[in-house]
Length: 425
Image (cartoon, rainbow, N blue to C red):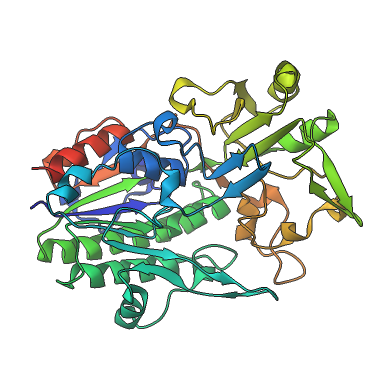
């Protein structure tokens, strides 16, 4: 039965590797450009790979989801049931192939044999209990013992996010590969840390990028060596390239100024009133889904946003994104621009969670959570500090494989089809 280790590397773009190289990477992996999906963001990319389908079919239109009936934005929901459609491993798994997923988004409840995903418990009185959800039972404790320490969520996201997260995941992945009782024939894992450096420092900061790439290449090389020892082929792919961030666009500010986005004052702060807002923008890097309550307002909303500097397009979802969960309009940022979620201009209006790592309360992705704010331990609220962004699909990411059967593909969806065929051989 075919055995394959899939290593997804956040932010691994073709241009980045061409400019800076991947020192130490095994030459047998044969890197090549890969066209990302649209939008080029984590959850959409992973869902596209798992199904081989476009977002209009698998339903993951970005890293978040707007529940129109509940009037609620939900980012980073981990339920596998949000990913619609058959999985690329279904036929092979029916024939006995085992499947593992480590640190992939929306993996909880997946039809897999091994799953490991961060799953902290948020305490009623504040703070959290750090933990990971593991399948089979006891997996997290077993891997923490193998690595020599538990996984620390603050290294995975927030101002302390660093290569420590990737090192732990790589060590745990190697432990799975070396354990005959655990090791599945298809194992998918994730290295996140390059993304943090690129968002904070930008792809043009050679002094920061080259060490991060060396670390990435070293982890890939070590995992590849372990995988080969146990009879695995290797596939490495980047979910999106990160490009320079030079301009911030605030769609919800524009909607509020036009009387289309409603807020609820609480003391001196304001909170979004999505029940009465005529339009709301769920932002995600260089793409924003705009939900319009009354279609009679659609042209007014489009005109309000399309004229803003930094907006390349404000239009109905393109065919590959035309799913019921998509916005009535989809905004695409101009090269160098990106979308931030704030609806306020005065800092005193900011909701309490603006100064904290709170990936579930905000109505958009907030890369400012990678920076310290004042007073500590709050996070930054200055979006001009962000130096890298992604979401557009006009620059290639990177793929590399140890076997010719997984090379020469044009797009991420095509690559998924190749993996499906490889697993069935």
